[in-house]
Length: 190
Image (spheres, one colour):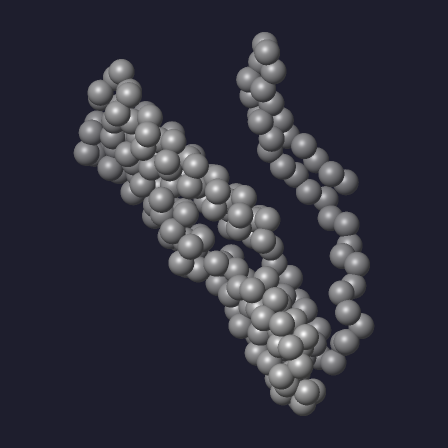
């Protein structure tokens, strides 16, 4: 829920901010940059709006069904829970699949080509395209996942519940902005 809310809000605020700022730009030649940025942000927001993660809504629906007591047959409740698990595992897998990665790259390359070929703004086109790809990949790679593993465990009869995940080495980039420096920090966890 926080992931979708965070990225959805960021895309909406970014797109709205760019569209509000565009008419006030002093350099009229940079207007295509504003509108291409807004278009890429709108596509990112649209992806979240059109294909959201359903797991939270399905969990709430299942809990509401159980608490309402309209279905007392445990087999029916189990079948409903299984159908939600299967659907939500597929939904998560789609959100991290090759089609989404390819679409993200196409949006970035499209931004590059529109600004480069259409407006001869290759520098900002490269920056916009790479930035768009980087933000899209960040969104894809940070999407919550794990239901596919849970579904495999369920199908194999392993009903022990969630097992503690082994701690993995991880890396991340974070902005490093102070009064005197600007840059990116590389942070590692072992």
